[in-house]
Length: 159
Image (cartoon, rainbow, N blue to C red; front, top):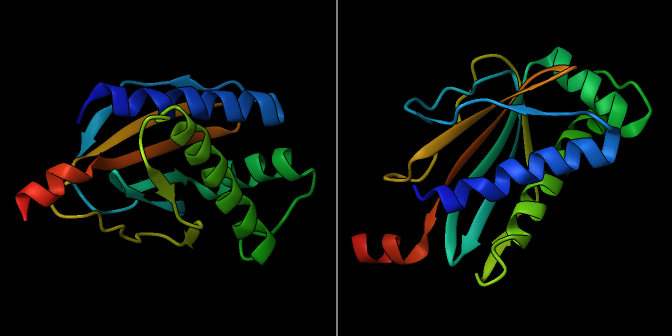
């Protein structure tokens, strides 16, 4: 995967977290993720379509997610509540939307977010699409951004 596809997501998570709730994000070394198991037990998922296709996942441990959602909303929600899931979905939506804006020359659309909560869930990505795991550290705990996108033309040529 081209580094130019990852940089917008690194910039976006730092921008969203620092702007929305003054939470600095330290970015670790990105690496290829080889399995489908979710990194943590809370995952916000966005689909990407158009000139680029794939998925973006924001994955966090429950405790970190609760702290971040509380900073974001100003209210503490139980992990099981619909409001908690909505807030996680909105976070991945903002991160993906800001990154999408950096792909201005591309006809790219993002889907409404889905949120999966629970231990040991799996997230399937399109076959042949590499997934880059971007580890992030915040004062609230670890957050991982998983970017599994590729140019749509590559997909069409493979078919």
